[in-house]
Length: 143
Image 1 (cartoon, rainbow, N blue to C red):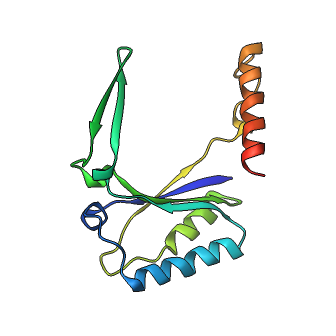
Image 2: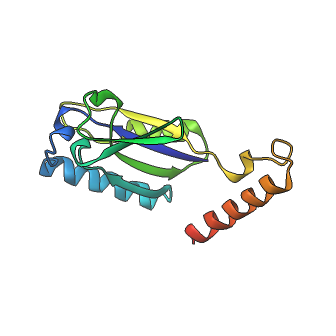
């Protein structure tokens, strides 16, 4: 099972403040544990929303809004993509994420996998072709 662990943003990450040396070292050790356990697929920190944009689609048109975005509790400061055996295992890894004394929040979201898109849900030849191409793409990306 793949899970994305989403590190929620806060006022500090949205200010663009770099982590303290203590937090940086602790995060590096945590990442090493994920790698040694063979569960980490990917992980990155994200720059503040002031460096980003939102693209909304409605009525066949796209609208772009440059950051920053006001509500930090809806923003993401970083992520890990992990491969684990269960949701319980993902929760255990999320509990171990190091934070400074200000704390933090991790949101866990299970990732759809090719096996979730069964032929009985999508019986058309066109849908089957799309699923086959997606599966081939994932295999190339993971090698």
